[in-house]
Image (tube, each protein chain N blue to C red):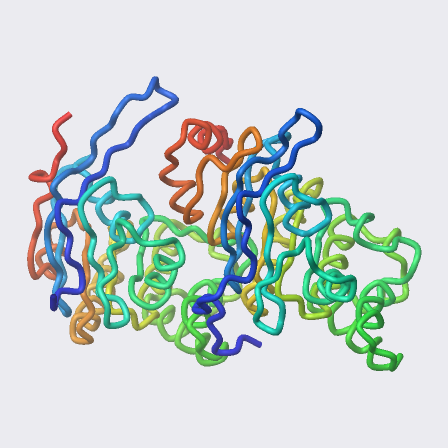
Length: 266
Length: 232
């Protein structure tokens, strides 16, 4: 359980973005984004559709090549490396082990036709685990952690509800003990009650494991619950950034004030 | 400085962009210190900026000018200019805040809501829960409610959960926004006792209390906020 750790005391950033930009022809999707993310820190990227937040997430997670600027990541040897210059083995290590990526649509992050146990076990096999019993035990313990009945371990996720799929996707990502997880609208498309459960679960896992995370969301309540820091994007640029409760309770920019004041009271 | 909190000429203005950029001055020239073991009560009518000052000391509201010096881990940090990471560090190990309303995650059990600040500081879950239980008992929250999320509780019960969460940590600074507002006499007395106990532990406190009797019981010094009112 929770070790007396304080990853946020770590003074070296885990990921650094410098003047990051992306153009599609004449269209600028993302422009001049710079920030540093520290171990254990959860950063929310908020903004409406088309603000560039999903493009930014793809740039940060090396799924898209930037038109300008760069992203650096501190590998486990402690050296900060430019993602664009990584070798194939290093990229594989990041994608399969040191990073997680939680998609809004669980079908993109899971293999829908194989069992839940295999979905979780697959990432372990990719890093060299080969003992079937141990893989199954690890998978089963992760299903428990994400509150999925282990009696369903042999069922394929296409038989799961939306909330269960999303929890399975999280288990699949966390089983390799990544240091950084990217999340793209992780609660999008779920019922409100299912969202609350998922958020609570993610919040606990992130703090217990000391994970760093970058969460893209248009839902300010998600940002408030999960993140330490928030970046507000509009028209491809970061227009306001700061501590999450500071930006949400004392927004400065006109657009942020509009976003905050547009939340319907429950 | 020996003071735990040293505020000099702090200033806060809201700019309401949705109302045509109206400037709403809240406070200016806020200056006072709080020593260890001292409880300073902010006084002044509603709207004078008491809560805003408390939120500025917690780093929840940004400060537009001046300085908010906080003694943190043997150094002085100016919260008016601190990086988000520093503010989080200050909140984890130096400043606790009991807000007027409880803001809890929907599904979390009361006992865990209260224990969370301890767990975040590395205290084992079992011990944290034990201390949380002791505090809840002292604040007269019956044990059968501990496993339930506080969102279903009455206003007074929620406030007591909030107080337990705020008082459980051994932080050297505590900010209290109307901690006794919706409590009955018995529970108000418990809160007064808890504040006394914190004073003996040399905790520096800033409080807002409207109840004259409570104010009289806990205040070592009163700072009148009306003198900081920003001229509109």
